[in-house]
Amino acid sequence: VEVTDMAPRFQRFERTFRPVMIMRQVKAIKGRPRIRLRLRPTFGYGWGSPEKTRGSNHVRFLLPTFTLRLTTNAPVSYVIDEVPFLVEENIYLIIMPDESLSASAAEVFHEFHAKTLEYWRSFVRSLSIPFEWQSDVIRAAITLKLSTYEETGAIVATHTTSIPDSPSDYQTVDNRYCFLRDAYFDVTTLNQLGVTNMMEGLLSYLNNIVAGFDSAGSGRLQPVYGLSLETKLHEKAVHRLAGYRGMPPVRVGNKAWQYIQHDALGAMVLASVHVFFDERLERPGDTYLYERLEKLGEMAESMFEKPDQSPWVNEDIDAAPDSLHTFSAVMCWAACDRLGKIAARMGRADRAKRWTNAAQHMKARILDFAWDESKNSFVSSSRGELCADVLLLPELGFLAVTDPKFLSTLSLVEKRLRHGSFVAMHDPIQKREAKAISIAVLPETPVKCSVTATLWFVQRMAEIGRVAEARELFEAVLKCRNNLGLLSDDISVSAAGVELWGNFPQTIAMVSLVKTSIALSKPWHTAF
Image (tube, rainbow, N blue to C red):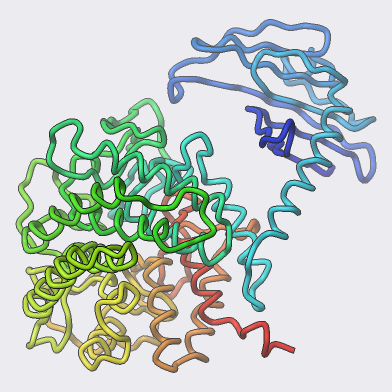
């Protein structure tokens, strides 16, 4: 049989029609196949099963807060009793809230299928894509589109919860929320793709956060919010679920909303800067928004030398932060640096000078405390740890990629974090004395690497002229995707092979794929 699944989406009445609906067609393509249909909805993360009622061509599932309806041309008794039957004609199944269809299931499927195909074809035609890896970028762009909560403009970090980040010594987390750190990367990538409507939606979401900043009197900006601007994302474990491959716990909520992470201040300003410079946008930045962003800049200026919690690691929320983090400090610097540029754009010379001077002072201090002379490298924290986030220093405009100090940092990252074709976000041996590691030999014991960190490394390699090697590593990442071209961020690397782990798909990994494709591709004007 051939199975076609679809979530319909198309233009209707001058707006996007995106009903809560899943449609399926089952088509016999050879012989006389028999199938068994199983539909077992649940609620409350496995808490219970709904009661069922039936009609002549539908089944209703009575959930606590709403009723779900399956409309089908398959025999309803076979569906309810899960009885195998012959596929003698195309089978159509439509799952949606409890509403009647205006036509047969077959007619609705084919109408919606044709319109949905045209919607996505139109979306793809609107993209600005590189000459090489076109299909890969298109798939990533579609994934980014489907990760958008269009009511508010938020982009979800991932669609799943609690898939462990490695096969052993693992953590589980629920990242079905909007992280401000990710939002910065999302906005820049949407700009590169030319998808201004999605970019405007995300910027609107972020501007709502800016407008409501400190309305609760907390004196801080959260690193993560709910898709509808929820602030309290209380975390709990759902013990009745066994977990992915029997690896608990399954988590709902994310304690990171309570973290103190100063990089969020820079992420907000870096993302918002687009509304002051991009003349394609319908709602340009104004004095009100700028003055709200200045409040974030003032906080960034006061916080850049204060400890916070690691941007990339789940930590104990009850323990006070005890370490400075280079990435957080540089993001605070970036907030002040960009505020100076925005002020200049607005013709406010006094504010431009104020923020430029602040950024210069902050940069001098960061260059001092983030540099480890004994390692001849920038380090990621005042504890001397090395993390792949130091690879972002050139991208953020803090240092030129050709700066000798960055080149020596890149060399240490390659020595300590690279494993074959992949790069770890953190150094698994950083408590031991640094030693040369053969980057060509994969470890016997699995090492947790990061797709995103690997792609940051690939981008910097290309920028310093190691283009052929960068392209080779990029192709290694592409081979890790599933059959739909999707990536998580965590990847287990060993001599036995590589395997994706972690919540799936991961938006920041897909965004990094797009940015790397653009960075490595031949320009269109020289391609043929």
